[in-house]
Image (tube, rainbow, N blue to C red; front, side, top):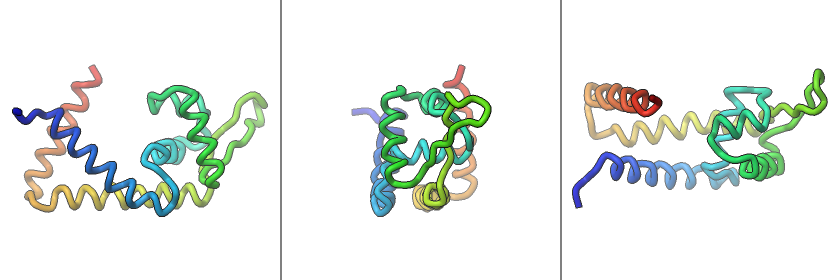
Amino acid sequence: MENTFAGYISELRRDFTIYCEKELEKDNITLGLLYPIIYIAKHEGCTQKQLAENLGVDNGYITRALKKLEGLEMIKRITNNDDKRIINLFLTENGKRIFEKSHMLFKKWDKDVFSSISNQEKEQIMNLMQKIKESRKK
């Protein structure tokens, strides 16, 4: 079978997922639960609806994920003072620790992936990936 870009992306995604899951299992977190943590960290006070929309998942999935994260004491839900119908999401100290851990995980995986190529080649790949990403948004 001919190699395709999609095939390479799939293989790298699988490798990345396995790597992260192995590291995150120590904290009872899956990669699927890490993405809401990352979003909440970058958008403190967001709502469940904003979180679901920006992660591209349905409300049922986010409800279950937030329930798990709350049970793991990673997030807290705080009622909005201006509108009691709105619940804002924040990370706990434990959630912030996992967010910081995600930076280390992603950087270490990148370092491992790029270990056999030059800095110039890495820069070329990153520039091309940015172009591809931007072209897919159109």
